[in-house]
Image (cartoon, rainbow, N blue to C red; front, top):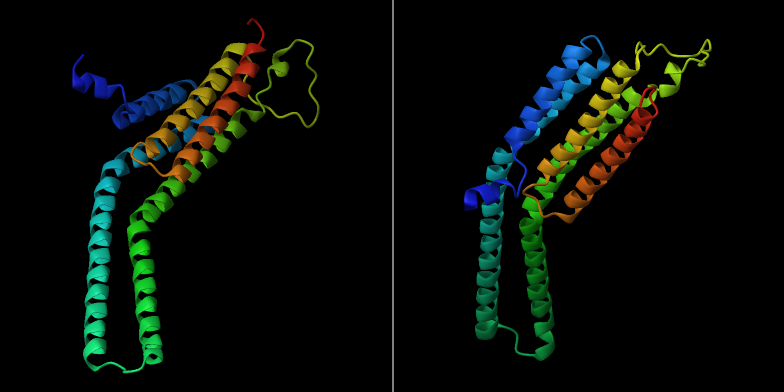
Length: 240
């Protein structure tokens, strides 16, 4: 097996994720053209395309920010070193004659070093904070969409299709009168949740940030748990 083929199966392909999402949207639109689930599928495509499209541009933007922050950090270090050298040179040649008079000078130099270290730390961590903020925004959107999908399947109860089911004045009309229609509906919800987990993983494909990776794992666990509930419903449908 070539290196290219090996690499192909070691990471998610954004193009394939988007194409799979489009295929699902077409299937939902063909079977449930007038249901709200179709609009959810449309939104899923929008999120998938945005995540896939921003992956490469985000890497370029992050690389530029990282180069800029490193350059500024170097400038801060050089300016601090030059200032300290000049200060020490002037102090040695024209400074105070008694020892206790050196204390304010030493205190000032220590403060300069501390402030320079803080500035360098801030600049060094800036690219990671920007990346984290952007990715957390995307992941929050995916988590919200997962809950929307869950809301769509919430009232799809297999008990409604039992012969002895008795409705009440508060019973909602779900407009799914056959076991096959309900199974298709629930199956599409499960597939959407699975794709949401894949899109979340796609967000963190290039990230090593522990907060991002933990958030992705949380979303994957959330969508997996929701999908398991859906398959429990499917297993209770008449005729299965």
